[in-house]
Image 1: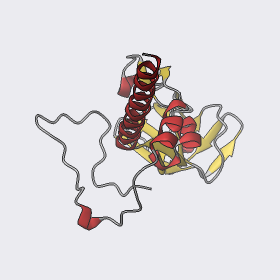
Image 2: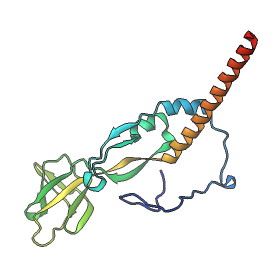
Image 3: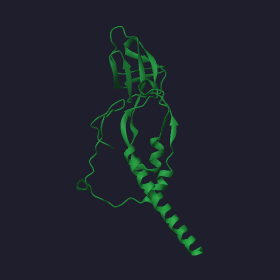
Image 4: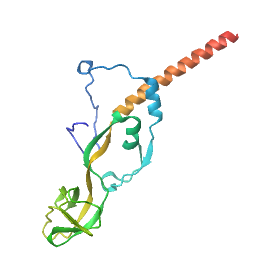
Length: 195
């Protein structure tokens, strides 16, 4: 897992360059990457068309990227797991007396969910669950009658290291060049022999 120093909900705009430490003296070098294996791994990665479920935060722009769970089966070092909230409920709910939240959901006691109300969003533990309702430590603002239940917190939320995929691509491209150069050299030798 990666240690986070900066987390944002939206894009980061940089007018210049993002710089990463890469000095040899800070690394225990294990050897050069195997370009042939890297090419095979790259060919196994599915590029997927999708849209985000949470269109309020992410918009509805079509995306063309990888899906972490599929990438993890091919190139696991490019995927890590974090704790985050997924939009698996994503519904408006009514606040009942005694601060019960009226909503048919499969949340269980002890799970944590993100609730969004007038005062903003909070991740709170589910204290009790009954048919068609659940309760947390949520305290509504004066006169507040509804809130938005975003979803539950998961400990295995996957994140992708796109730099790792980019380097896999560099290694695979170098392998293709090496293979094509060898193929051309063999064809030239065959042509010379035929002459």
